[in-house]
Image (cartoon, rainbow, N blue to C red; front, side):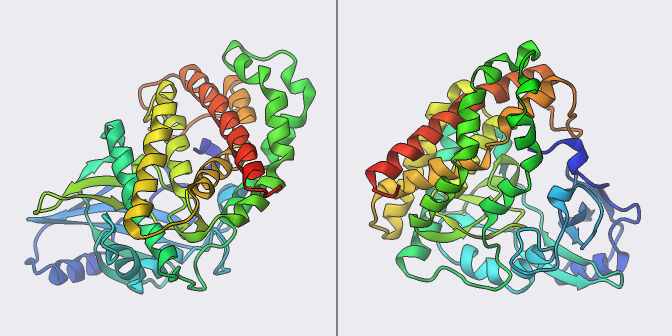
Length: 390
């Protein structure tokens, strides 16, 4: 969910390095031969400096280049500090150290990661990460039941880490992702709190304007909700779980698997946090119609709870529901002013983000999701009272 101004320029014009291509081809056991590359992605935020699919005779791979840069929007400016949510080397560390293969791919949860093929430290200070070219069913094409299956797989993975007491603690993992994400959007809060901005709004933002006071309350409650999330067990999270980062695959034994890509923000978070992001972001980015929001939430939470049970986790499921509701509500406190700014023409979207929708249609859809965000905030407050956390 990013306005065009949040992105920096995508894909340097030089393309993949030919020597790296030759190395990867040899590692795959394929002969030298002609190859070509195609740019992937609709924009680049954070550390991603370029992303390509490289195709040769009978083989293909993905090359992702990450780099530290002071360019781009302040919300996505990279950091050299390991625990910072925008630490620029995190994804390279996760793949090249074997961490993801060991912790995620080796967990027998049904969650997998692309096979790591090679890493190269470049003379300009960037790092290129070469990965298996995943060709499963993109999450953007999933029926709703696919979200339940993915949620169950992540429940197995994340619950298993908690149940076994082996949540990773690598120094480069993200800490405090949710708080940092919210803090980087104080400019939206300024719009939310400016009463003059809400007196005469475009028709597409009127439903949201009618709920502005509820969003002001949510913004004012954000610290309390972040605090109560401290009672939810901590696990390893993806922290950017949404359809464009997921693929569905079927194994040779007929078992279903979900392959998750883009681990640039991975770190510690609450049980339920990833699926909260999955449910809300899937609607905000127009993968799922908001009218299906209640069903989507039930499928995600229900699937996740089944996965937790599969993993051996036996905690209070209300904590998981709290993790789901509170994290999603807090993360998207900025959505009401975003809808207003979109309706007033202050924001544009990156190429491809609109899909087949007009900006007005997107504003209306996101306005409908705003109502569900407020419902989640109410759920989080109720659960916190039941659990005597506030």
